[in-house]
Image 1 (cartoon, helix red, strand yellow):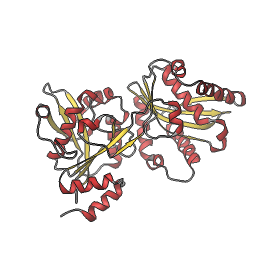
Image 2 (image 1 turned 135 degrees about the vertical axis):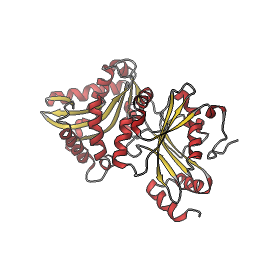
Image 3 (image 1 turned 120 degrees about the horizontal axis):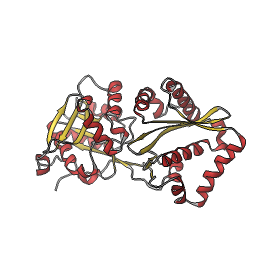
Image 4 (image 1 turned 30 degrees about the horizontal axis):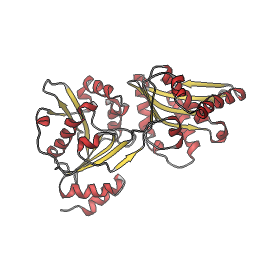
Length: 360
């Protein structure tokens, strides 16, 4: 039986797959785009990867592999890069940090052969460790590995309509959705605005980040850490028709903002901000309900609230498939690095400890 970290021997499935090293993110063109669209994951797009690589990539070329079936069709993309070379060769998926879901770009039906390809790539590239972060639930069996970390990622189905969604929630929840918005309408002139003007976009993002800072104080949140990335990707997403940047205005003043994406029939809530002086007016609740209603009315099949187990997400979303992080190690250095990762160390601490404790 394979141990969780051992690279398995070649199998018939992996032998039938051709591995092509890809020189750049752009090299696969429409093939990458079509496969990403089939997965419904905005974080799998070449646009997300290329924006991230332009801002945070290394001087060395990325470690991207296209897995092709015998008929030459693209079965999977493995978009990796070497995060550390000395004293241990550690690879990660391009886009980590701001992404909420990563992993091989493939259909669920191709997970088993893709997992074997991923392990074979670790062997071929002589990796000591692969940090396989934020995989959708279900990869553990394919990888023959237990996750190091499981994170909440609530979601809800929008297969029907807004009314159908509400009908599936509690009577108390339905009453709150209707009552809170009506209360705002009685007391203010209420307007919901979607950002659609590319000329105005950076100003709209200024409002989003200002409301986010107001909500969370002077602390540097993960969202603020990646502000430059989001400003660049938002412009790309708007051009592609993926950006959803909503504002709630009261009496012509923006008091809450919602930032997310619409891609391949999936609406994704990424981040938000609101005026903390209006905490009694349920601004975030009202705006979130509005975005779900708009997604349902526009025929989206799913609404993802992405990572985080906040109470408000559980109120809106009945399902939580979660995302899982794995560490696939080879050799002494790989097992040492995996042990550090299993102990819950942050990636920056992991790099320092590898430098201090690596076996020579």
